[in-house]
Image (tube, rainbow, N blue to C red):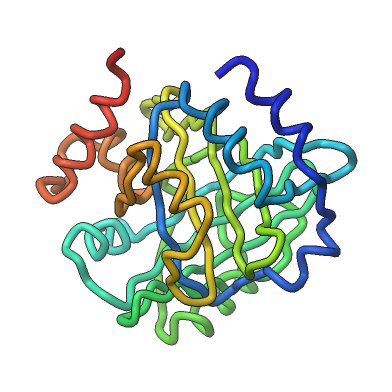
Length: 249
């Protein structure tokens, strides 16, 4: 994967301001996971169709996220058990932009991802009264949560030249809690974000040609499972095996 940063510089850039039309805070997401060594060829094939987000001249952006959950791991188990209308709560720092937010994501029963967020000064492991009130307002019920784990990665964000579509590729993923840590640096997690699901996406077409298939995958759930061996995880076993298999030659 050593030459992919050079290939990214061949894409036409797009600024944050220009991306206003594709914020897609309410959207459908389609995820993919594949071996990192497929990146150079994939990027070459995507070049005619997408622009790349540039912030202060940087095309690869670092993200730091601190995830919260209840003591009985409600958010993790809701996902594991296939419950609809499930939530995630996190602080996320967009390092290059020097911005941080408290973000709450809802996956509803129509398959839509809806993200609400409030700007904060910095990530904190403790929630203030203001944070708690915001969470309760968005979720609609009291929610007692605490910081559980960090997930950090670098992201490349692409915007389609003619369609209302964003494409993100997350690389160099690491994770940790107070007791353990790990990484998934051997894989890339890509996500196509659209107003409504459409197979006309050029990324989806090219990915299929390269035998990269959609997979329902959650960075939070995979890393929670890895960091907490005693947690229920039978429904994630197939995905864990798939991710581990990508490690192999």
